[in-house]
Image 1 (spheres, helix red, strand yellow):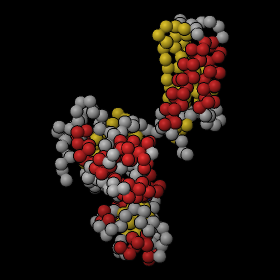
Image 2 (cartoon, protein in one colour):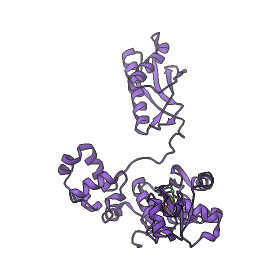
Image 3 (spheres, rainbow, N blue to C red):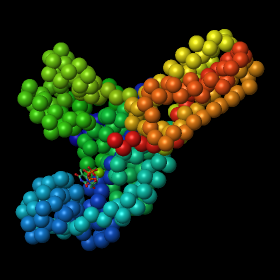
Image 4 (tube, protein in one colour):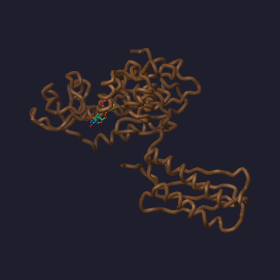
Length: 358
Ligand code: TTP
Ligand code: MG
């Protein structure tokens, strides 16, 4: 299946380029690195099969074991039935994490932006020195040379399509989808390939005759809204068309999120200044919430008309809500607004960030 691998004329100037790199049969590949004798033999990682009586599940298996119909999340007893002669190994997370860390370092070195999303996958917005197809091959070669592990890479104008593309052909493949090809690329795929469509949504969609992404693309939006509600229906339509503007960024690695405004004319109108600060605090707060990032510190910046700049900050023990943060932003600014000095710029930023685990 080569029709989407068209390296030469890829990507119009204005397109964003996102690469999604996913390691092949990761846990099983790690075990093969440790014990090369396992190569070309079926290898299943997960719970102890106890001769078919084990009660746990399969974490993953190599491609040889997949030929027997074994899959991630399948009860280990089923896997045993399908291939009793497979090599069943327990999960050795410490080892896999170490391998993953080293591979992620390599991937990161080729990204202007980098976001690791799980132990074996990451997005990058690649550095622009290379042709994207060449770069993808270079990344595959480097990972293989260093760690003897293969990976599959999807390249597209956004994260959504890049992720689907990396899964499109596996193992050891590169799939490029240009923006003009997105709709056609997604059309024949099963709706389960779209992110956020789990078993439940799949059933609901299939009940109304939507089996492929193309069915979803063509389904009348009004009807979809009636069944799923406006928000979900619009989300479904957007992803069916491969639309996604989320950024490649490492969650929790960001140190702060700030917004500032320079007034068109220096002002001393207190109400206007407080309103602006409150709005900036709200923008920062909502920006972080959207990305599920918590903060502990708020910083206020004030620049007077003579360019002298002052800041004040406050750190909290626990997460605050929007209403509290609006009040705090104004409280911290109070000190600078005691006299009638004119203000040129105000800024609000939130820091001490951490990924929201809730
Ligand atoms: P995946 O990337 O989903 O799977 P994979 O790398 O084994 O195979 P593929 O070539 O299709 O990418 O998941 C990465 C690792 O996460 C996988 O090696 C084991 C672990 N995992 C589980 O423990 N349970 C699961 O149900 C899945 C899907 C993965
Ligand atoms: Mg993988």
